[in-house]
Image 1: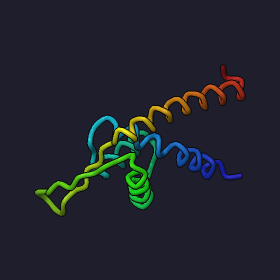
Image 2: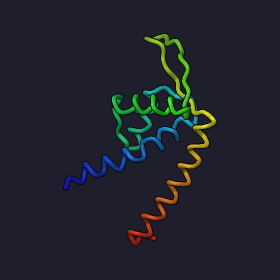
Image 3: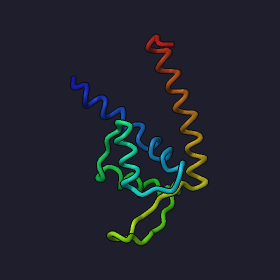
Image 4: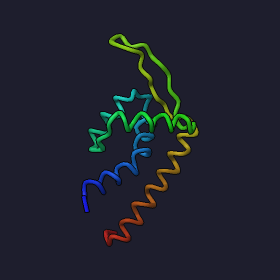
Length: 109
């Protein structure tokens, strides 16, 4: 069994939660999200991020606005919607429940 493949699947499972958590802090540009994920060792490429942002937007959890850039094309800035904040609150609860369950099952509690 390939441990790196399993670790990658674990990271993918929490990616939506992490992206919403980043955007909740402040309005952000996609490259800012990628950088924060990389800084946290959750390496993501644009090909993974953009479809996820689009899905979150289509689900009403995010909105965006365009802003002209002085050094290139316009930039799309994302922010979390009220529905996104409610969804993230539920994900927080689910995440905490999952942590406790894994600790209990792994004997680390």
